[in-house]
Length: 292
Image (cartoon, rainbow, N blue to C red; front, side):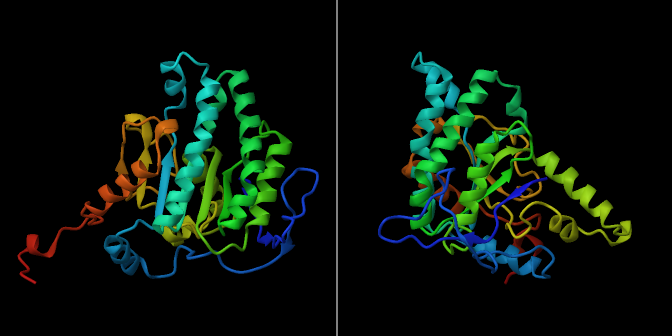
């Protein structure tokens, strides 16, 4: 699977970062671990679970951006109008998540199954996403947000769009603020299959395969598990989204359609998360007769 994003970026000056033919600034090489990142298999699973349970703000929030088509339909507009209206929500939620202290934000923009939509809609989405990426690259850089693109493996993704993804990931690679992962041409099952293939190619003996080792073969293995998934529009499905990473996520299903979803709605979801009792399969000590 293609993984977009190498550790490169440029520091903007008063005139803004220099651009190349694709419209996304170019960058210099750099190295280093991601902000707050961790690789699977570091031997601290129990500590991580305790830390996640105690956090008031989820470390990793993932959003299934659902409802663009219904938003347009209710207004007797073409579906493409709903996708256009979604741009405002995307930027609003990125800003809200960053301000709230969320360290990792993942947005489900285009699934492997979305290729089955009408060609005119798919073509419109490809052009829209490219315009949005190019338009907001300076903002993302200025906010210190590191951008990644999960997927982008299908040859039907326009070459120019794939290049813009790569350029933005390079530009922001050593930012140390929030990490934004855009899942585009993404499928959770495909990620798992590719990880299995990678393990087979590495000739790892079957009895040496652990969950942590398997996770190391997924794209971006430093990505922490998802703590909270928000799916707008009231629909209650996983839709093949980051299947490995959402294993113990809390889910919230606000009724608002994605183009109507705003920062106060996002913060309400965080409030709901704080009220959840995350036990990761265990039970509270008092339930087991322990008075402590």
